[in-house]
Image 1 (cartoon, helix red, strand yellow):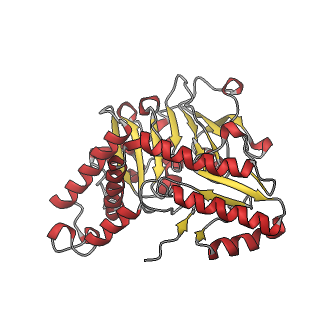
Image 2 (cartoon, helix red, strand yellow):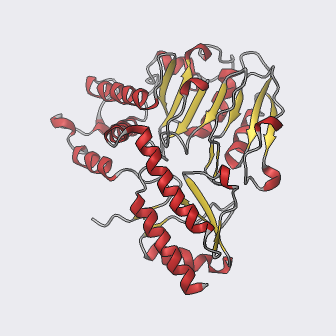
Image 3 (cartoon, one colour):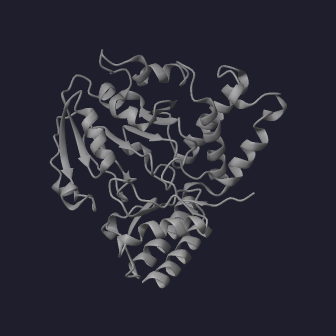
Length: 359
């Protein structure tokens, strides 16, 4: 088996132990004679898988019974519509923070359903920072406040949660399960699975129960949180195999010490990479240090004419998917939970050698 180091922003690396278990169970899950991929989602076997996954996620994140946990299709982008449709509750305005490309997409989609008040934006500095909270222009009569705690493309991360007098909504696709959070500070948390949870095709929505039942009349049934909560996320056929894989990832997280252990590991990885970039003139990271993501590390070469050579040689060295997003260029190393410290060490060693050979 030749497993290389995968720094893809998503679909991203999965824990090897999880992949091996899935491989072992792929044709015959627990001597039942069929794959999870072939099971009825209403069978006792799959209901058990689903219930265990939800229980483990609640345990890992400290999610109380005040919240419904939904396992849905559609990706986080579908939630850009679902959030205003479910939460406006007769109001015509919502607050949004603009800190990058995913914030912009959420703002654009919400604008189809309401008047969007952009409370703060870092677009003028190329999304290289988080606007100071005391500069935010919050409409206190708006239905909710939406923000993106980690911008996958720009590598900017919130390490604090806005505290406001309305439901706080967070697109946590690229930061969920990377460290402990206080779930009770949020009205809705949603996340595409393909970063720290499992394969693409699954989206998790954690919604405070008092926010259910307020969807507008125009809301399609499959975007109505109450419909999914009432049906245990099985109003239609769910992304069953992705749900199963997520459950394996949740068990892996618990086995290695939970989110506290995960956070310590992620901090070590990020510190190694940022420290190397900051102490080598050949590379640069554009994000202000206090706002640097622990999950997505963009970096530029001093001479962008060397970009193609860097990508070619890094791939030859077994370091995959380091090309930056097309909207910003350069490089990006996504160092999610399943990316090992050994992978980061190998990347730093390669970068040091590449700078020596081409500097």
